[in-house]
Image 1: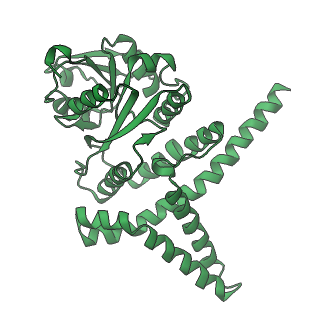
Image 2 (image 1 turned 90 degrees about the horizontal axis):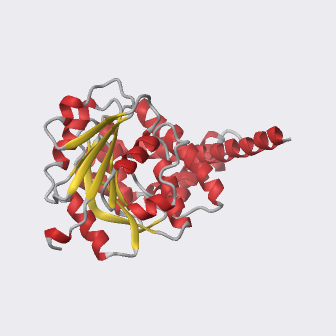
Length: 337
């Protein structure tokens, strides 16, 4: 592509309480080797003052009067955008110098694709074990997933303006960080638009994870609302965190642990439970091998029980989400009467 023909990319960053990461995010963005882009920061009614962080860069900073959530903030940024490509970037993601270039090149060479997203890279910024585990696991999940996606990821992903407008943008009923990007991907697919995962489009995650924050994010912000989305869609896609292998692993971990807990009633249950857990362990050797290659044997050994915990609460969250969804339908039916 010649520079004259390169499309303008509008980079839209929703910002709330992110003073510790926004500067690095902007530093990475403005070190891009792709120059035809504009940057729009939407301050989502944050108590932080981002003006000093944005000042060194040619970024447009817009402050909303009150907090409405990232879906609303991204939509307001899209309303102001001049580019044909809307690139959504989280304020705690530092794009690589080639992130925008790879996005523009991919969309130029795939005119049939309406949206594309990438993944975190394998170099998380925070050195803590939980942060390394969480971000590396995200990287691994995206890197081994099918490139033909039904979801979307707004942490580092782009949508053609026309497709974005036709599906109505992000659903603003999501008033906090949740599955508004997954919902967008489902609606894009439902309207006949193609979404792709391009594994070379990457950014560094800057977030510091705590155990409490990890559980809240995985269960309350992702698993439960994602289950509700799946119930509305009426089918389970073999995609990202809900691939068939991941579902089997979660079910196997739950069954194995339940059998071990019930061994006083029948000793053979302990044998069956142990066998199930062993099958789950062997089935996930690729991810444990990935952890070992990236961070060594000691890291991988600590990652195994944490991964099993992830499988357990993911397995519990799905039926809980189905139950909550059914209760919502009953309550809505009762209210309609």
